[in-house]
Amino acid sequence: MKVGIIIYSQTEHTYSAGLELKDKLSESGVDVTIERIVPVGDVHPGSKNIKFETIPDIDGFDFLVFGSPVHAFSLAPAMKAYLEQIKSLENQNVACFVTKGAPFKWTGGTKAISVMKDIVVSKSGNVVVTSIIVWNKGHDKAVKEMVQKFVAQINS
Image (cartoon, rainbow, N blue to C red; front, side, top):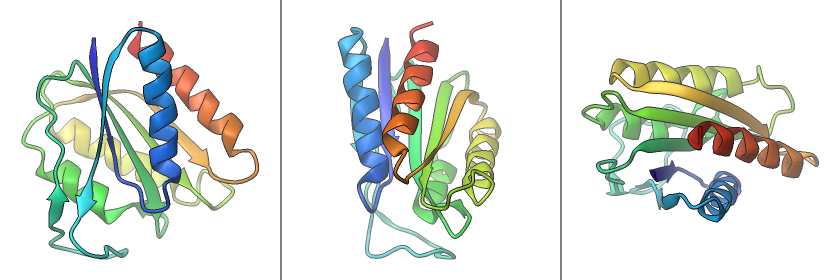
């Protein structure tokens, strides 16, 4: 099994969650690559025509994981733009997670996951597991729960 973890992160919270997932998958014998989406310049909510310094290639993976922060109660524009530029995810199994600061999942987390799922499905992909991580004093537990849930799904 070859897994690609594609992360957009500004504060390193999302990236650190992706690294924990990578480490746990590697421990279970999975071949894992983690790559970052890096836009050119600052990207703010409402940004359009986003250009990228790096655009991770998704070819050759058996399973993909997309991770992004929530911005302005929705999916970060850089992740949205990246997902939209993918040509196809036909028959690709996908997991999606978001990180956010506001304490309730409905303050952007649910909408961000919904946007990710809609784009993946529009590209003929299969979203098999999702997670919303609220980055507060309990975030360590939330990250561990996401990692356990994703590892179980990927290894099934």
